Image 1: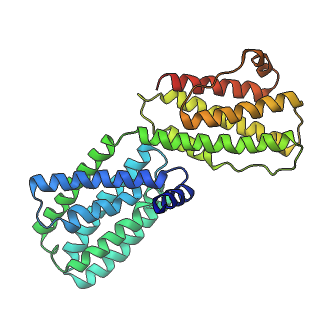
Image 2 (image 1 turned 30 degrees about the vertical axis):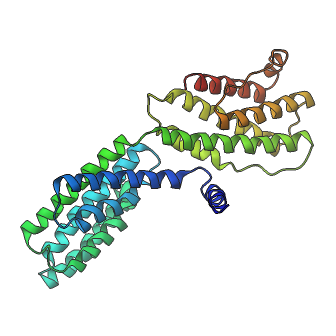
Image 3 (image 1 turned 180 degrees about the horizontal axis):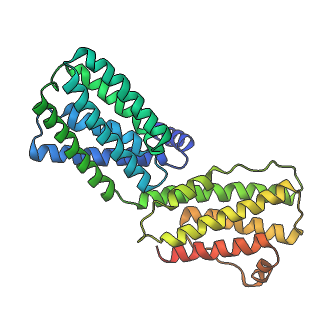
Length: 309
């Protein structure tokens, strides 16, 4: 009973499973770091080998594409290495250190705001990690000790990148599929309301945002172009649904019934990852309206995706 309630709570809070999969990714990366440390025995690994790379991992989660994720993580770790190194080496020169920290922080934020927008995410992490490194006293005041710590963090970053590359991209496909299910569920509600002539607001469908974001993260070997096509067709159909609601456009009853029926079927088959079969006597009706033509293409694309699974 407790497990069931916990599972339902997680599903309600994290309906697209983004946080759960990000957590799984973090655990996977941590296991690789543990394994590398077990084999090679990194000395005093807590802060420089574990803490900095794993804290910087927060920047990776913000990226909307794989390239952004890798870039954010790279900037954060490399920026942290430089900041921790400089903070440690210059900490013995008290007056100079104060001015250095002040102008270095301003330079980072100006760079993020006016030159490299992608640096806006890593900058707070870089400065917080550099500041936290000062709690270790003057251990980094020696140039060679600081260099050794920097190498530890750099090696850990390479291990993390190996984990990111090895992490199965199929998990991103599962997030995308949940977004697709959400989009279909929302459109089902719209068609039901339209069929009963009920007033309904223009829907805000978060599933389409999830689909657009994660479609670009799927491996090219995992039906990449089929997923992109389904994403575009879903966005197209959502726009058509919004038009129906906004301008109170009317579809003839047989059309809206078929539209609603196959949206429900597609939604159910989306969860089960099964092909949707269209009745022969209903195929001709899919040529009658733009919404039905789009849905027909969407079903065909989904069937193609399922047939290759």
